[in-house]
Amino acid sequence: MKARRSVLVASLLVVGAALPASAPVAASGGEHRRSPAIDQPLREHGQRVGLRIGTAVDMAAFNNDTEYRNRIAVEFSAVTAENVMKWGELERVQGQPDYTLADQLVASARANRQKVHGHTLLWHNQLPQWLTDGVTSGDIDAAELRALLRKHIFEVAGHFRGKIWHWDVVNEVIDDSGNLRDTIFLRLLGPGYIADAFRWAHQADPHAELYLNDYNLEFPGAKSDAYYALVQQLLAQRVPVDGLGAQGHLGIQFGLPSTLDTYNNLRRFELLGLEISFTEVDIRMILPTDQYRTQAQAQGFSGLLTACLLLERCEMFTFWGFTDKYNWVPGFFTDPPEGDATMLNEDFTPKPAYREMQAILALAA
Ligand code: G3I
Image (tube, rainbow, N blue to C red; front, side, top):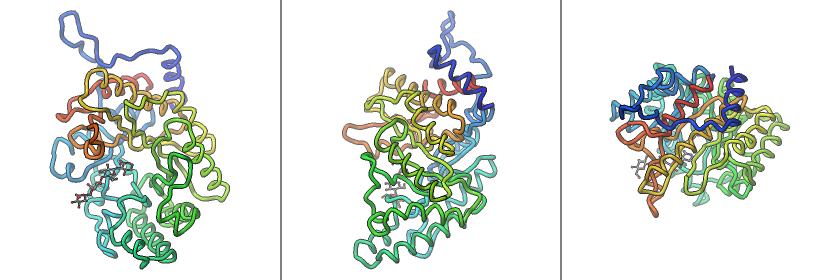
């Protein structure tokens, strides 16, 4: 099936077929009735080509917005906790982890036949305040930090044992220059903390596939090359690394990677034996938006999805939110204001990006 989709998609690239972003308008002025084969939820299209289509889930929206919750069930076959599985959200009070919202998401995923992509066991952001304060004050030294990290990974991966498809074991551990990111973990524990995290996660849950996850891996460069060297080193040390997560956070103002650049950059990790997932795809723009920016966004989403379909072991294509009604971008990019980063409008109506991806998935089947 996957080989077949690669042939189909490769021919799409070769002939340069420009998929209609939306159905051609009939002579009568109304929109052509879309082929039922195309106008289906993304998860249904994905199932035909062995690809799980996912979304990050904002648990406040999940519990307060029925349409948001229902759309997740209909549209997606994988879910990622946007925040509630992060250390700072799980263990606000040291020694008193609260899994309520994370457990709710896992239970909902089970009911909706969705797989759970765990995010994330180790990140330098959203750490508990008591941890960062302790390191800053010196109360938590290197030995204590290593013990706390080991305890955290065993507790969290153990709590969800057997229920997590993939874990983002480490998130964003290399900077854009290709150096190991300067974090409290690197400073106090040395570069070996990465291998340790993977070994502890595998011991805690041997069922989970274990990922490195980062942004700006959608195109070649120093960062991608550094990850390639890191993966080779970890595999040589027989560290249990299974996959690479390319986050896919793009902005049209920076230009969009070519499909073949993305494919070639990630294909080399497959040749090392890794599976690939696109883990956090969104494509933001400087506001106000217009039809040209929205069309560029559609091309950006489609380019990443096409690269995924061309790869042999691309398992998951996950959006970092699916509606502009709930999205992290406006709160983080304010000058100039950015937003409109997802494939559905605030009222859940589709943008060209959504239609384009339905068509590409329909073609690939
Ligand atoms: O939970 C607290 C709440 O108690 C408090 O009242 C509130 C107001 O201060 O803040 C809440 O925490 C916020 C958290 O989201 C949960 O809503 C943080 O302030 C806010 O900074 C945090 O933003 C998240 C961001 O990661 C943190 O860097 C975004 O929602 C989330 O989408 C974003 O996701 C990251 C991925 O995890 C990793 N890849 C990049 C991606 C985008 O930055």
